[in-house]
Image (cartoon, rainbow, N blue to C red; front, top):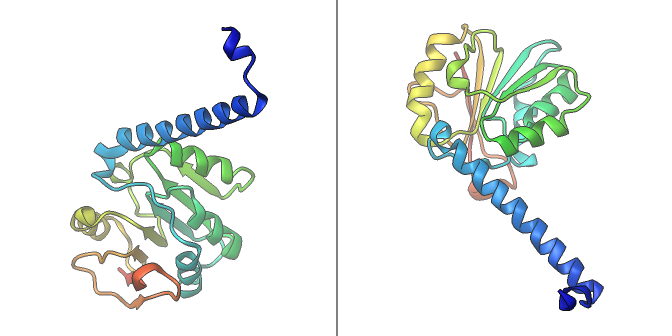
Length: 188
């Protein structure tokens, strides 16, 4: 006990910082592991600002339209669409850490709603625009859900992975995106 009390302050600061980083990393790992059954292997990865800007520019929305983000992560797509177009924005996120981050970053934005629910159990019929950045293994099932629930004319935007049985209106490859990853834009 005497040794601990006589350690220099920099050692204490280092131990506190290292311990805090460890706790944060373990929280991330546990939240990701808890969400794996629902996400079917997809991890929480933030959509880059370049891709969001390309989406916002390519898909103009009208005030009051409903944008739904399937697996919204930290909600950055929802917030940017709300800021640019004053849309109603709803995101679904099952990863607790991503959900809490999205809630925190969306404080004060009354038309941005983050729900800690699986979008699979939700009816998407009211959406005017659907945005997703999902794992390729779920895209066939998503295609079936979207065809069954979306009204004609709904726009669907998918990052990286195409939606089977949908024919894209456009395929964007935003400058600066890693490996020229595509954004697929569809209309139901």
